[in-house]
Amino acid sequence: MNLRSILTIATICLAGTLQAQDQKPKAQALVKEAVAFAKKNGKDALLKETNQGQGRFHVKSGDDLYIFIYDMAGVCQAIGFQSQMVGVNRWGVKDPDGKLFLQEMINLAKTKGSGWVDYKYPNPKSGKIEAKTSYVESLDGWMVGCGIYK
Image: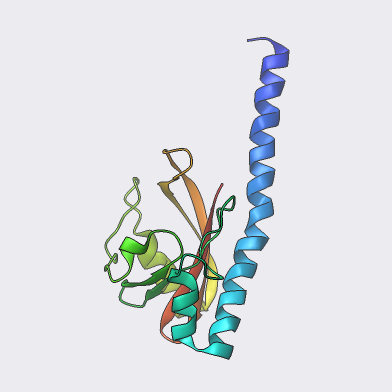
């Protein structure tokens, strides 16, 4: 492999890392917006805006960001991407390394109110398991979150 190839690969990797870092503030802001929306309009309105295809917190064309909401027992209340998950208890779900990431998110929301959790998850765009991080916040017995691929 020549120097030009190595530099090209390094540039692509760096661009991907910078793009992921760019998304972190957006993910956090989307969670804060969702929590504020619920406080103003009610939790049922937040569920509707998250689960509905044209909803404010549902994934948009060309974007990767969407809200997910779980109760403290691990039951999905809303998800702006995979509606078939609503009502499913995912308390025991693990990533490929055996990490109980949803339990970690819920416990973080319960104990600290908010924060970031790192784990691995299938990326629908690439079809591969990739490193992901999600920002979560507590909201009256729920955990509201948004994740990005690193």
